[in-house]
Amino acid sequence: MIGARIKQARLASGLTLEVLADRVTENGQPITKAALSKYELEKSVPKPSLLLAIANILGVRARYFTEQCQPEINWIAFRKLAKMPAKHQEQVKAFASHVVESQLWLQSLLFPNQCSDFPTAQPATSFEDAERVACELRQAWRLGDSPIDSLTSRVEDSGGVIVGCREISRDFDGLAGRTNDGFPVAVVSMQVPDDRRRYNLAHELGHLLMECGSVDPKTEEKLANRFASALLVPAKVARQELGVKRRHLDVKELAILKLKYGLSMQGWIRRAFDLEIIDKGHYTTLCVMFSRNHWKKIEPISFEGKEEPSRLKLMTLRALAEGVISRERAEIVCPGCSTESEFGSSSKRFSATDLRKMTRDQRATILSAASAQAQEVYETDANLMDFEAFGEEDLYGDAPQSR
Image 1: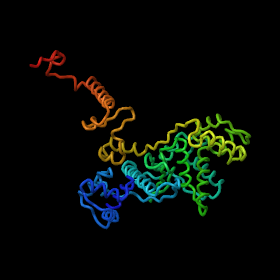
Image 2: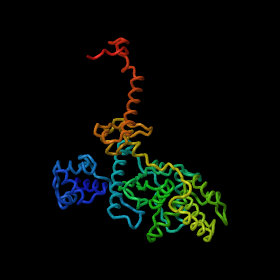
Image 3: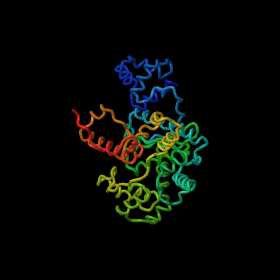
Image 4: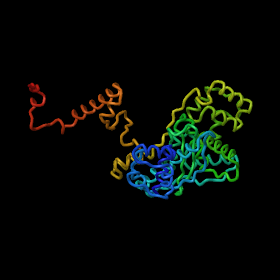
């Protein structure tokens, strides 16, 4: 188990065996790549001092290596660019496994009887099947035909685990899988615009809820795309908004619809073409216009959605507040959750060394905020201001002159 945990932490950190061995050696614990590989393969057990050195480099607590290993995840689909290095792919999977493990562990403490509320995957080999499965999911989740306020929240409320990757790689959009306990997992890149992130999540749901049988991988991707569009904008809604047949779609019209439904302007164009609202000629014309205006990656209007995973943080803070876990454990499960503040302040403690490394303006900002906070506490806390042993003149009178 220790070896598997070392490998998981190493992959999540994006380090090769050689790089980790070099860094451990530089920190006073000489080790070779081959020896480190033996530990990961469970052929040998590292001594405690070596485990501590490895933990410090990988940014985890030493006891992380002796804790229960993560649940098994059967990865179904990985949507990425062909140029994405294999080591980055493994890093994404390792990071996702760590988050899934943490979330399901907390869930077992706070909600021991909770199960996934996802519909059973259904056979789908055609675009009509993809439309149907998306429609049935909306019905199961009682979404009606209204725009989805937050697809992320809906998935999390139904027992799905969503992992947001911020800094690993820009070469992937999403990853889907299921744990051995049946919990669906969707991994999405957080380095893309909100509408793209929302679409990517819907795409991964397509992989989780459609059994595509013997269709080839390219067709399966097309079916997942069709599912995503149908989930965000049902066919009935698209025809209500655009009409049954159109000769021309206006850019401003597409912008308004993007803001209303959270589907990109290009997504609306494709949706109109797929439903035969516009013909291939006008579809091609619009695609060329978007390319000419450099709108393929950055559209002329931005959609601000609510697609930030929050369940792990909420459960961590609840467990911490109720004394179920320690602050140290909370930081391991959800780094930063116990020190960061959503209201512009922070309870993080800075050492003198930390302050010396900052610029003058950074130090001034932190010290000013600390001073204001301390002043507010002293002015409002009677226990700090009421001193029965001293008179008012003792507290506020002139201080004696030093000699």
